[in-house]
Image 1: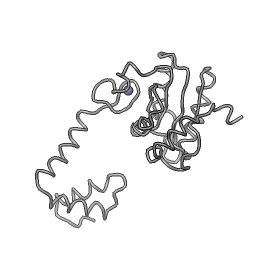
Image 2: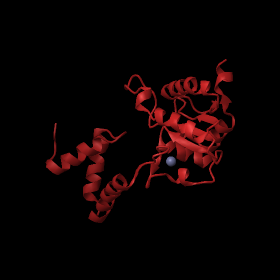
Image 3: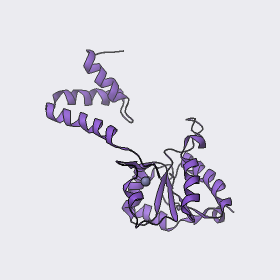
Image 4: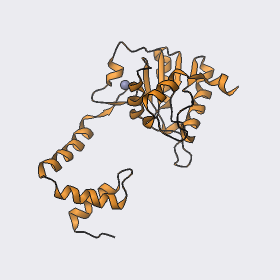
Length: 204
Ligand SMILES: [Zn+2]
């Protein structure tokens, strides 16, 4: 039910579509924006437009990127034989903060979730396989989130990649179960990275 006049209600509706913003917060933010200096409101609006216009997906790893290739894929000092698979670009930021990894990344852009109707074909797995062959990758580190979807995705990938003859490791437990990588502090995540284990050995 629309409670306010046109543009105000439109703003509340748009804000309410954002993740983690309920109807009450949407209303509070909308009224905050109506009160702020027009310059500040315009800066927020153009930051959104700018980001949408200038940022795309890296054609190699599907990280966010301002050009064809992201900063990590452009960096020739990064090892190409070691590939860390993550769910989202923000996981790369979390792992980079630990300073434990000098290889490259591959962003799946999600995780397998039957409940939300996300299967392997919706993720960047085809592209991952093509890359592995092309770059001569010999270690894959599965750094999906330590929750049900992340574990299911890691297991699916391990089953797919193991027969190709490379080392497939999973970051160690010790991360809060059910949590997201991005919320882990860098010491915990750094340890999880160091303590990564061969997937087959762990399960067998
Ligand atoms: Zn990239």
